[in-house]
Image (cartoon, rainbow, N blue to C red; front, side):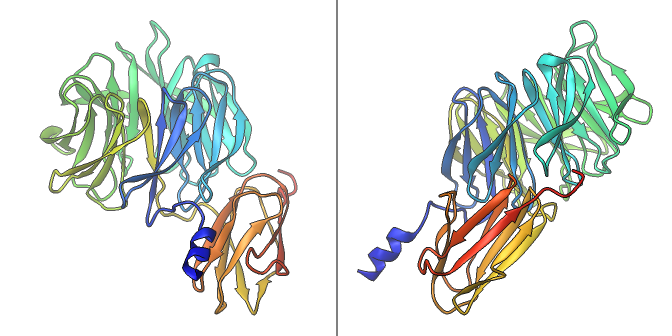
Length: 401
């Protein structure tokens, strides 16, 4: 009987390790994946045409652009629920998170501009005119961003100084740019072009293409992740991930994935790669060392995928549960900050919010529960096991913000 009671208190399935978020373009949903278990934990409805997706590290929010709408959705990754919609203008596509975690840049394709979303306030802080922006890459030092501009007859990469928020340069192109990514060390900018079976390497000091990396038909995304000795390219035609030598710019070998692979992100393990397969409604979890893959079925036409890596961009505050009390009983945080409750008692407790927002029904001794608070307000809560234990989280924007 006790086991049945405890089972009834346990909430939705949670990942044992890092999670990945997948935008299902034709379903208007996001699938949440447990990478270690290779399972879908939940599926969330989002704005129409999810086409851009970034996950803030360290348990921070996940941002999803609705390319057939005018909003960027904000997902609370602690509870995997939709926390907010940010109006940015018609047709938002590519997203990029600044290295300091303060802003998400949005390619607002339908209104010919790039928007800055303030991660803390979830508001648009600035905009800059850029013709038909599609995707965005930010240099690892946070000083400059390059935007793939798909304006007909004027295809280009547009350089933006992120400190002054001004356009500082262009790289003219003969073909429409698809995606662009900086290598982890910032020395190379890799660009794919429509109809070109090669990755272009751009020298951002000279603002010109200096080399090509040959690939199969229709390369879509090229990257050289940190701690990987080789670069990787998603090649849509043959349905594969191609490995290349960044120094010689020559292909090394390929790993088969699903049909029409669209995007990829590095897993928490150095040789692990996650690839979204738009044509086969799946995600491939690839071990690049062995070439072995696992396949996870997701929604219809998965495009962008992002792994939520460990990190310290999200400020955290601690509440201890000890001697049958929350300590401190009241805590004040800013929007976008995380609160972590840790049960340091010998008895089970829980965190149940008065507004019925997601909490944790059962928190066993030694276990923790975290939540990122997006919106200002007062959040009263109590222990779900011992209702006389109460606490309060006050979410208040910093003065002057």
